[in-house]
Amino acid sequence: MRTVTVGVLGSGTVGQDVLNLILRRESVFTDLGVKIEISGVLVRDVNKVRDVPPGTRVTTDPGFLQECGVVIEAMGGVDRPLEMLLPYLRSGRPVITANKALLAERWEVLREYALAGSLYYEASVMAGTPVIGPMSTVLRASTFTRLQAVLNGTCLYILNQMEEGKDYAAALAEAQALGYAETPPTLDVGGFDTAHKLAVLARFCADGNFPYSAVQVQGIEDITQKDIQDARAAGERIKLVAELERQGGAGQPGPWKATVAPQRLPENHPLCNAGASRNALVYEGEECGTLIFAGGGAGGMITASAMVGDLLDWVIGFPGHVPLH
Figure: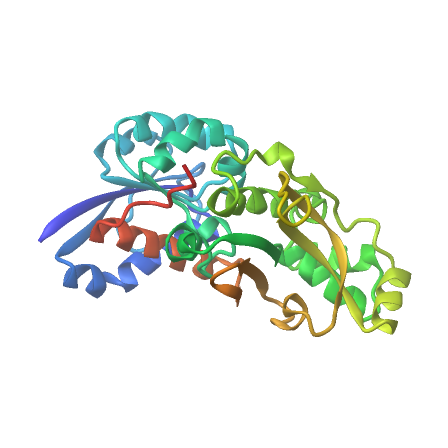
């Protein structure tokens, strides 16, 4: 039996669920001849009550990273996790993360490790709904043409509540009360969380160096009840849509254009009927045709399922998610 030492950065909802899911799937790892040993969990407050397996070592000292064969980053933020992960990545060891902001905004630093197969980040877009895996593998055989996606659950919830008659302020307040939106909520409602995810996706199907700064972003803050009702009267619904397509005419393709903005879509559009509370993505390729991905795009255990799936991939020997070269 091979022992794999795992370190976890962060013990919020996702970090706790990762730890519990690793324990729950112990038999799967055993079948692979592997015993998972948690070397440590980095936290801000060791006295905080947490739902983690008994005996889990929680600490404010990141020194345990030196003991680990693989690190799972679930702390969020950009510069602090990067500072801790870079020495680890430089040593040739793998990192599993759901941190789309880190991937989007610090790609110039991280790309070489992604190309080396050391970065696993299925959970960074649509959480436990697998889209990065297919894009980084089988869909490479098809010529990508376009994608449209709904990638932020907070905006989805707010717009759904507005369709039920609430104004934007009331819908936002409800989303915050339920814990769907941060305070302040700009990252979500301003479209920036969606833009982070779109930048990550663009590197698998358009340009391996696609910069986050190239994404044009407009949020939902200015959507009114009149906008919602006008759309419904026309048989349409308003969604915050991430879109990636090439500019230029047939035979003369131009640069890739990435946008995040509210759009009116027909009620029968896949992004409208994939489910009221689910993320969805429509992928178009010349050879593969139109593919639709839909499922949970947030939540602790949903996200943990993809992160532990990445851990299983690494244990089996599959490389991380490699962008276009």
